[in-house]
Image (cartoon, rainbow, N blue to C red; front, side, top):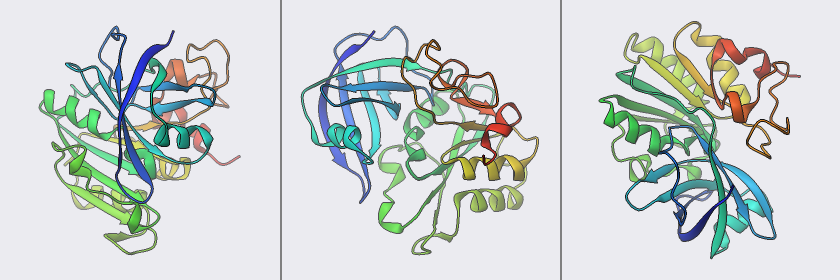
Length: 252
């Protein structure tokens, strides 16, 4: 069932990313967990799954971070008025068992960070960030959307800012340099980045958040099956430990 939502603002964060805020007109049943997601219905255009970037309980304000990649995401950024929101979907992640988290993001994988930081601060857990993008103009000030974050390390593939290379490489080097600093690693991004982290970091507490086409969001349609496993992203994920999903990350 959709919750009615009114779009209240759009802020351009960088050359590539936008933050879009909605006010939910229907009260959610529960607060969202970090790395849960919603389906946003754009009337007469499309319905798209989006990570929950942030949620303010007192105002029922839902935030998402959008990269324009097609008609649906363009309509989210450029449109106005009222939308439908389904969710909150997925199991998310519980941070209460950890005192320090390294969040590794590739590209728009930075989107779930604000809510993760908020819930970690409530649990007295510190969050450091590694964020990798293709070019420096895609970056923005992470602390502007997640002011409670601790250290931020950036990697650019065009070598214009920060580490020259991939987020997975930078994260692996930091974990080697500072053994034992983080009690959990949480990674969101493209499959090659997630696969590299899972292969490099072994049996640590490494959680990866996956992407798939989500239609019903209830586990009924099978559109988000994570082959070769009998798992559904909407019901069983989107967050998994590496060992639970490693074969899905392998190239076809």
